[in-house]
Image (tube, rainbow, N blue to C red):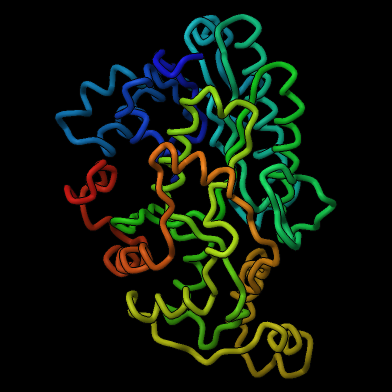
Length: 393
């Protein structure tokens, strides 16, 4: 593969949060040709209609029509045999696809293990099997897999890009299933080259704050903003590794065009020493999102009260929400590992992809929370949030 050649991509998960940010950049990249999008559907016409709507939402009217010629809808499903792709469509994909970018995954932290494995492990196996077919019968050059830095689970110490299964335990089934999926991806390296990307906690755009969902870091803060909890609990000194979605998308698009990326694993993270404390996240919410401070219970005390007779002094609704939050407990305490991203940062710096710090994007992040009423509305037309020049928004 040469950087000067046009790259045709097959993408899963292109309709998700990170996926759409990646699509916006790919569509404006000269070296990218056709983009085949796997869309959950059984009918070609329905899939095409969904992709047409995505393009209409993501790009200005004057660009959408021209871009429509480069996007090809592929009806299918990550949970179905053969990805639900009609066998008659496979020869055309084999003849035209150069790289696969597998973004598709379930990020439900509360999912049962069998469900997480079905979506994230078995779904990945189906995409890998498609890749094997395309490599054998066509022109597939390599496989790009978006994992997560939280394959580190409850690990401790410094975690490098080369670390994977260290015998660590996990905070939830999502983390475990993503580690198992990454191990699976690596086992296919004998059939085609692979590249692995590991983002950490991904939040809204660093310039506009835009995000289409309010999960992970947002969810516990939104409970405070909506007055759904009277007290909060966490380890205020705990550290979180947080990155804005534009940084992750810029990095993936830059790296997938390079021959030198082949065989590499990249930590798309803030990195060791650049984490943010939970206290600073809360301070940002108080300052920019209109969140009122609540009484604070240390996490160790919360766990003690939960098992004691004193639990009756808290409402049933409080404990109901506390149980919903169980998959997030590890994050509320702050992770114990530190992500070494020095190799990744060196390569991205050479490509002009700059890493943002928490202080650079906390204000737009939280302002968007209030402007959107925590996801109840999109303040502007969606395509304005995907424009390449932040000043244009």
